[in-house]
Every structure is written in C-alpha cells, then in structure tokens.
Length: 147
Image 1 (cartoon, one colour):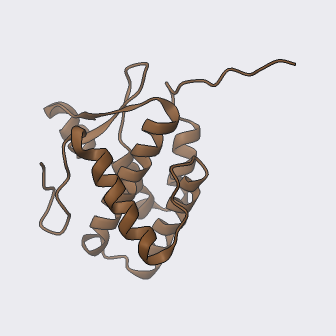
Image 2 (cartoon, rainbow, N blue to C red):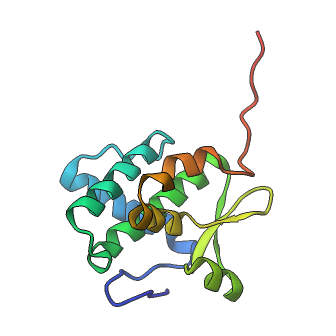
Image 3 (cartoon, rainbow, N blue to C red):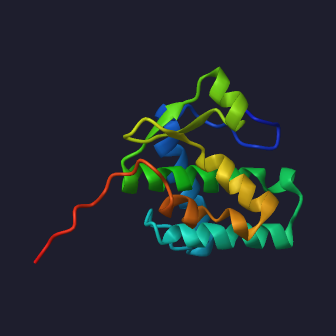
C-alpha cells in the first residue's frame, strides 16, 4: 500500500482498487444516497461533488480523502465501461502522474483518473471528469448495429 500524505487514506495497489472503490462508494452512498452506479452518466455527479467541495471547503488537505475516492471511482468506471485495467505505475509514471496507480487501456495508453479529479478541484469546470471519459483514447468501441 502507498500513502501520499498523512491526510489521505492509504491507496492500495492496483490489485486492491476495486475493493477500495466499493468501500468508498458504500460509505458515500450510505450517508447521502448519491446515485454512484458506475455509469458514464455518474461521472457528471463526480464533477458536481468536486465543484461543491471547491466551493465549500477549498482546503485541499481536508478534502484529499474524498478526492482520492472520487478519482478511484472514476478509474473504476473506466475499467468497467471502457475496458481499462488498474495498474501499478512504475517509478517514472509515479513521478509524472504523482499517483501510485492508474489505468491502462486496451491500446496500451496509461491514464490518471485520480489526478484528473484533483485537477478538477484545483482548476475548475474546464477539467471535467465526464468529458475526460468521453474523450478518452483507447476505449473499447461498442459496435453499432445496422437495421
């Protein structure tokens, strides 16, 4: 396991990410009944939650655990909906992305959903998590059925 700071919960290796996300979603939805259902549409809700955190508690250190969980949730949506898989970043990727884990897409590209959520918090609406997914290169394409 990896710890980014004393304020952030321990980030598991790639192998433990699905369980980490499940626990985070259970805690968050148990208190607020948010519809985090691993759909692409639910990523819009991630954007809105992060915007609320920016507005209500702009102290990054205090909200890091929530940002980390939302980033992991975003990654799990990519895994479930776009064919990605969790990977442990190598040393160079850790330095570049400033995260211990990320997503590897079927075409081999690595993506950093945890960092994307942090960017949304630090920069604002131009760093949309939902748009990140929609513009994601390397996802599986769903064949279109012709009638």
